[in-house]
Image 1 (tube, rainbow, N blue to C red):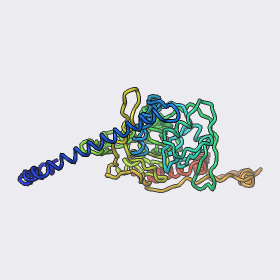
Image 2: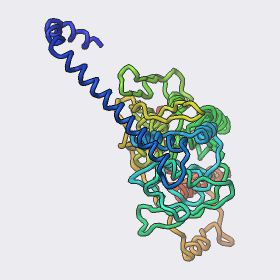
Image 3: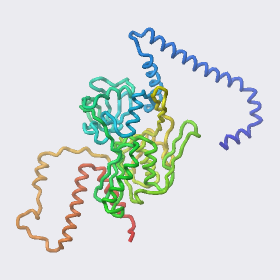
Image 4: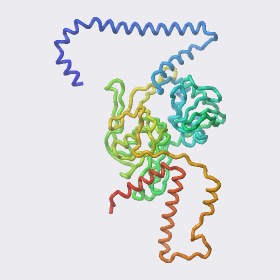
Length: 445
């Protein structure tokens, strides 16, 4: 603002001359632009009336106008759209955490529907749908050329009904069909558990329940561990989390930060920008944090990962995130409909935009596909024996009973860690990092 004032003061004299020379042309240009807009609106009116009067079949005027509005919005970017009264009501229900459908978050790319992420515990996830999959057909009908809302409408249907979607997946030579039974989707925003001495916070979405679920779940697991002193650290699992509410992303970030900026948003006008800062208090009590992300981590997930990464509060592990760095504002419209409009970009504390680039992990760890165990492998594992299994084997006489029990407990932990690597390699890697960070921390004694 100061630069503008100073420039104006320095150019006062020139401004007097310039005013007499250029006011006329500037007014003429603005008038021409306004006239052009009105001409185009008249053109829209002419086309609308011709369709109503001459189209081969009678059409509903309201549907025509809604389609025109949606076309105008979807031409801007993949995330702006018109929400009919029914769609607006569905969206309000979704942010509360329960809705009907397949359980996938989708966007549009190259004319096809692209899966941002399947949601944990939903029909889509159980059917094997993966982040990055392209949906080309729904029940045999192509989605090419449809808007995203039209494609989503094709996937909707009664709970309990079957839908067959055709999927194109990287690494697969041919498209393949997947059968899914529609169901009521009940989102549990945060699932928590103890994995060894680490607390795992699995955040599946950012809805109205997210922060409250996370705070309560973390407290329960810390209590189950016997207090924070017995906890090695926290794994914040944001994999396949498609995002959600900005305010919840800010609260989750703030939960582990004592101070500093969390995220900033910048719109077209600089004065419309906002900055959100952390408040004192760390739910993790300074314990190490590892954040897990992948290609299905988008939007609000990227805000959290980016904030904790920039403040060096957490190590980010996994694969590059989705790269949705824009903010959508839902604006109510007359008739109970709504408009979802991209109004800003968001930036991490270091000032970087994630749009189209995503969050890059500090340590890249891909999730390997699990090979199917052969019958020979299973037979070998079943026949695996040790000295202790042999009849009449000698006891170990060098250790006390307590020492033997401790060795067996340590072995059980190691076996559990090995089993976790088979089940979820990325999570096992994250927990290994926590162990290393804990070992480097100075003793409190």
